[in-house]
Image 1 (cartoon, one colour):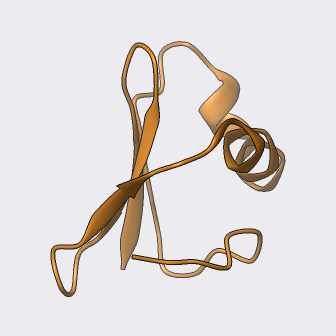
Image 2 (image 1 turned 90 degrees about the vertical axis):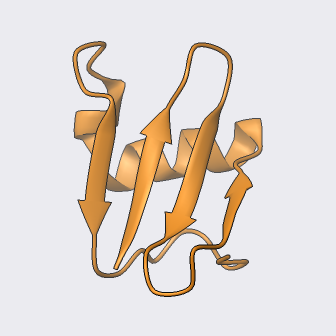
Length: 59
């Protein structure tokens, strides 16, 4: 299980299984927002998911 959390100036992807995380690049933010359009809503802060196709370097 993974989740992406949005902060004011950056987004972070977290791996719930091992506790690892990393910042998303600006390009990754654009691509992941296309895969999970709910991330573009200013009211959405966190999105949980079991699988993501657009990020290759998972934490």
